[in-house]
Length: 97
Image 1 (cartoon, rainbow, N blue to C red):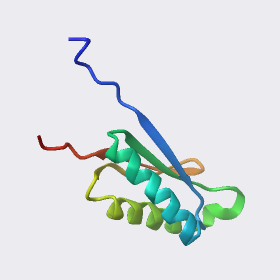
Image 2 (cartoon, rainbow, N blue to C red):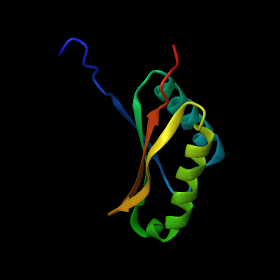
Image 3 (cartoon, rainbow, N blue to C red):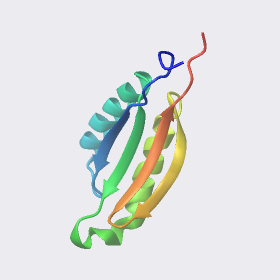
């Protein structure tokens, strides 16, 4: 039974609330690869100092990420603010054999 158990790998991707378009697309490619390899993805937006004012920007960024990764992963937990970071979990879609 133990030999058939699979280890779940969780990869993290960190954004800022004002992440630029090029940086976003670069991290999107990494997220796509992580999900294709079968790892879960924890995407989060980290708010430093007064950037906590841009909560909605962070949420829009994470929801956009979820929408663009829809074909390889599904949202496990919607964006949730915990202290200074807004986190969202994505799980890879099960591959059909």
